[in-house]
Length: 338
Image (tube, rainbow, N blue to C red; front, side, top):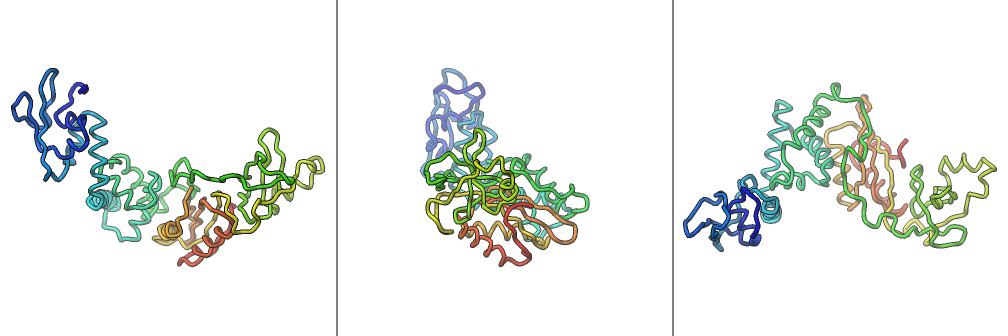
């Protein structure tokens, strides 16, 4: 077995097989029992001692092994076998950091307001998955601390935080877009199927919306909502009259399903503790993918939450809006970002 310089008995065990490493209780070199972190030399005969009753690897091994392969296999074991323990460990580390920054223990609502945005920045949809990753070593606390400090500043000292802003997708990794985003276009243009179309970002049409097509220069046909302000203004120009094309959905009706489309929601709400957590929890219950999220604090006790979500059609969109309108503190929801 080929191993890099500095590799030890643990690296050797995992190079043989994950099951061997996970059940290892000791090792021998040239017939002599040695510490499992003993560095190996060329030509040595290594024997791995295993036990069926072994409870698995130690977390310390992650920092002892020298090969990335062994480290990944150890983390994979903890991720799969000890999720509850991982969550408890990760939560403890995060709570300790929050308490250190805030200078005091925090309540559940404030913790959720701090942890959820941090978790989403690292691509997790729930605090539990985030805690689990920290617990099994998938994310180091050194990568998390700065984000926690930023969110603590936002929650506990809003007057000292940065000016309100919409957080961009680059700043907040969220759920990856569904693989079937847009699916087939599901749009018929001038009576023809299979046209090269793209969906205008200015209005993000959904199946069930009245739509119209515009022939672009080199990028196919751009599909807009019929009441899109850009359409209303653009159709006033007689020079572009021939470029506007009749379009409709292949399966008419708000319940038509052509895949998953981007939908934008702007939520006007009270600026209360737990508001963002309640919104994301409601979307999770509906199995709605969050593609982008941002919060603007208005300084008058209210906030604007900007969401980009995966949506099947206009009926699906309306059901999402109806669910969110029922949340305590939600005052209004409009489609799109103003």
